[in-house]
Figure 1: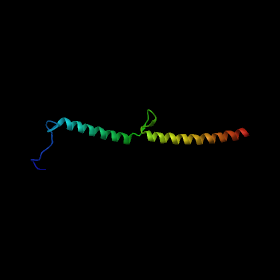
Figure 2 (figure 1 turned 45 degrees about the vertical axis):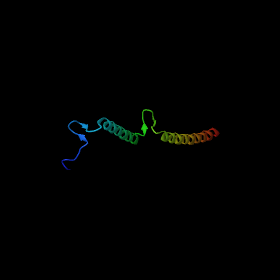
Figure 3 (figure 1 turned 180 degrees about the vertical axis):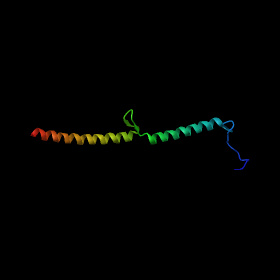
Figure 4 (figure 1 turned 135 degrees about the vertical axis):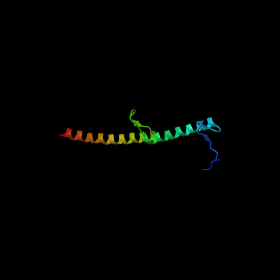
Length: 86
């Protein structure tokens, strides 16, 4: 790296040389967006609320659970009817 190259950031003052406030705000926004992306990739289920954070995933789960409950209920009715007959 050449000695006379221009650096946008001053390490001693811990500030950008030009437009410091705007660049710090942009850096913070980028950091927050990256953190949010990582959070949503890693945390699909909320154990406190016991539901998925994504509404589409939650709707799909509810649909599958209702189908399974309907199958179980129909099987239990068949067993109850068979036992009632004798």
